[in-house]
Length: 291
Image 1: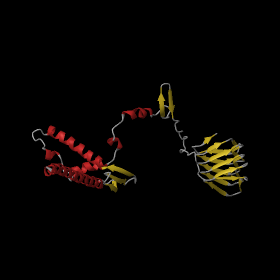
Image 2: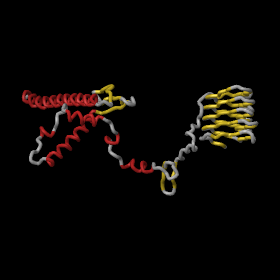
Image 3: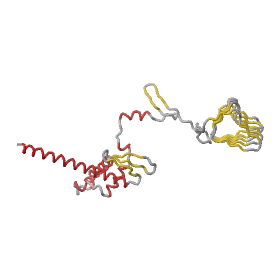
């Protein structure tokens, strides 16, 4: 009686072991085929493979971005392509129906490699189906007529994001943070006199009183800097001042030009009064904001 029961249990156990072995060989074959398909794609570089999770880590050769691709994504893409071709084949040639062996192409064939290369490109929009629950927020994030984006809307209310300011005519788009330099607090102004050339670049200066003064033929170039003063930000008297991509602030005046001074400004914001005598000249080269 025990011998008969042992034989009855041995047959199902053998069948289960054979099924597990076949599944393991099939999984290894699918991983090997998926790796070969990824290596044939010139846009990717296989970095690592995980047999347990059946995933590959690939690097985009053009951008260097790392992505994780599942082996079943590649297999599902080729299987779907093969099933579609099998359905269209009887319609194109009804006299010669394709058999099971003819409709399924081997994984190592050239056509299978081409389809694998197409399926190897990870496209989130193609792999994930559209969710109806997310369609409503997507429709809400539309461009408003005034240029702002609609963040949220409902019965009787609408929340919009402010539109980015357009660059001034003739100038380039300014960055509000003109410099990342550390703040330097000074108690005495920077004075340039005579036939000299002074360049102030990438500075963040705060003054107790007047800030920068150019006098009697001096030429000053201020670029990528933030100058703030409790008095006059930039003073020019019988001198030339060139200001580019900077922020000039002054409680008394942002800029004061007199005695034939020439001031050239590009992509600069002036916060405060702008004082100019009749003999001086301001040259607005575009992209400036005058308060």
